[in-house]
Image (cartoon, rainbow, N blue to C red; front, side):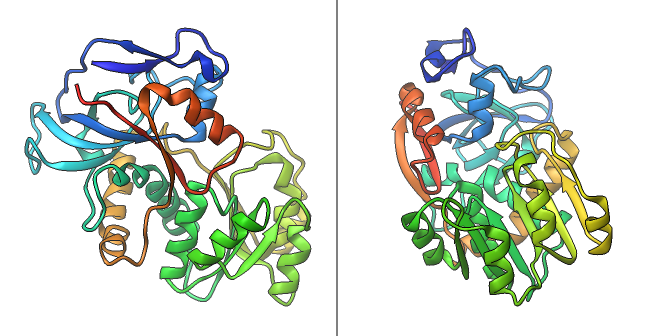
Length: 328
């Protein structure tokens, strides 16, 4: 098969399309012929040498894919060769074939074509596990999403609105904010020109956000605490703004608030299986009904993954950038 390899860490040019050995599905795994994958910021970090895949996993980038089941490993039931699926991966999505634990498979949602389905697994699992399973966002509460125009952000807006929450977003510039508004965002904050704490307090009569989904990390830590409502929950899922910040514990205690931090890739298979099952139960019906839709900015040939990485690094996209696998 072919895959995007990283012989040496570096810029987008470090991504090399090469012939590599086919994966063999182990006990409880299936082999998927990949139709499309998607670019996540974790892939950029892996390319740069800052985010190695877990031991024993595929060395190739790619945390999600869509495609067709080509073979079943020992002990797999409930799936058949030829089934159209998408999958949450620990790696290996930038390839024409990938072995996936059966518990991390999802059927192609009704009404979504197979290519577009590649935009769903990582964002749906990330948002549902963090905003709902961990932070327990409830109807009537306010969710603040940093990076509202990202893949994560566009999914978070839609899911929060679907359960009856109010949504605030930060994004860079009026065009991205307009797209967030189209998806249902109620409070639009241009982080380049506005202070999100001030704007959020204006829009909520000083109450703040009940849940904050943060991809920035250290740079926003202090301001996120200020933006939280009483009994608020800050969920940190990214570190684009650094890894070390100063936390005012007195402010946190005064609000009886919580700071939560997670990753998805390094979770054990049993936890990922539970997340995927919850997404299939709660999110897939919303997608099938058209209430929630995947947002795709562009598609790029998988062999040209460097072009896709440049687009994501430049934050010139809204939603997901997909990689199309060639027919082999």
